[in-house]
Image (cartoon, rainbow, N blue to C red; front, top):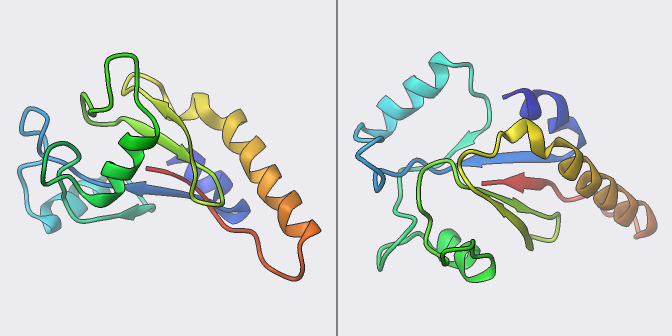
Length: 133
């Protein structure tokens, strides 16, 4: 939440995709999940619950997994796997669940700076957001 609060205005977008494929951690309805997130002050965008692995995997995760695998393959092993995606929508890095979001700050700031530089050198187009899913 701190990253969202501090870097949103610079273009950071955090996208959350609840998933119940890992030990049944997200059994609730969309309203239940949103209420739980709200109780922690979550302000970033929350999508509908989806699958991230298997034949029914959401297209976003099929794409992310096809672009970035980890040391034991492309499937997502547990909730809170993080993907850092640049302002052009290109996945740049994948992080395992134990990696703390705040530890990604310097990498995120470099990507935001690159997006700012690209926007400044382009015609009057605005910078596209950088996101974490």
